[in-house]
Image (cartoon, rainbow, N blue to C red; front, side, top):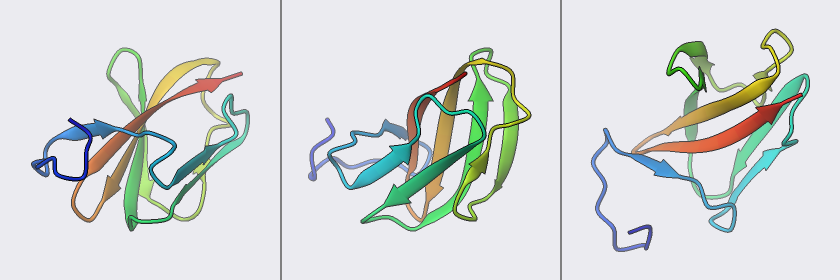
Length: 92
């Protein structure tokens, strides 16, 4: 359930619905990815490849660098005060 009444543990990962106050762009990405949330405080972010390897992890500073990553599909993990969200990103 992704409704407002859903109870999530801090270890759960919720896929982002872009109609829920999130803006993630550009997708596909080339050099840097911007993540904006209207409702959540973003603490840190991770880039995870499709083999499950963390390729980048840092406190969120307004953008996520992508220039050093090869083309492919990645999962962005966005850690907020209470939850972790995920979103698939394509790198050209």
